[in-house]
Length: 176
Image (cartoon, rainbow, N blue to C red; front, side, top):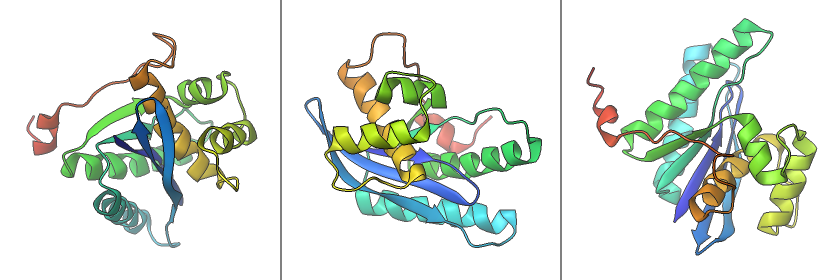
């Protein structure tokens, strides 16, 4: 099974692709979609196009997306939500299953601590996947989202510690 993890952002959207053979995750690819300093609608289009290209290239069966967290800066939270929306529409238009995880759930699944910092997440992702170099923060977060799905699917995460919401394939038709 191939899993695409996405850490949405209006300027940098991280992605990570892993394969799950039995219960052993294997690294495939990771990186960042960096948008140009354009108007927000153009950045959203760039996120959509970048994810669409990645989906075509890597052919994931499921996408794990980090949920929006609340921020003190409402404008930043809205832009993050819109970037996440562009990613979700891309996933839906490709007919893929999607799982959502809160940042705290991802940190808990990967490091064992819901309050882990980005350095701890990077360290664990590097160790678990046997990487030669530490991935950039956004890419590591995306790989961590993919690992969270892999762990929850293979039963490696305690029941109830990772909850997700499966999207019905019928919602991609945009019917009310």
